[in-house]
Image 1 (cartoon, rainbow, N blue to C red):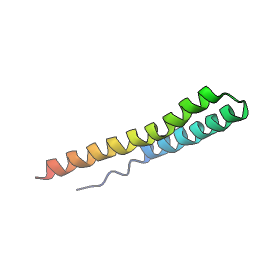
Image 2 (cartoon, rainbow, N blue to C red):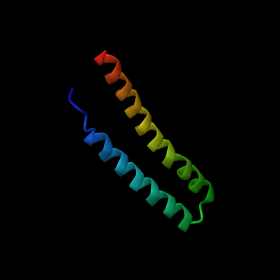
Image 3 (cartoon, rainbow, N blue to C red):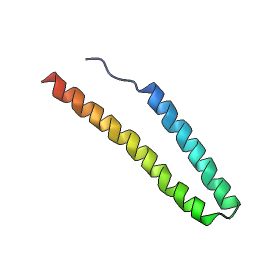
Length: 66
């Protein structure tokens, strides 16, 4: 069974998180509190989506082996 390296998705996760943190710091610097709250919620949501999809891929792989 070959393992998925998920390089593309890891790249996009990293890029999205870097952009999200940059947007958060920019919003705080410009004193846009509402935008900062929105970005703060988005950061863990992006990571949770990445981990959730990885978990579903892993379960599918385990179920196909049986």
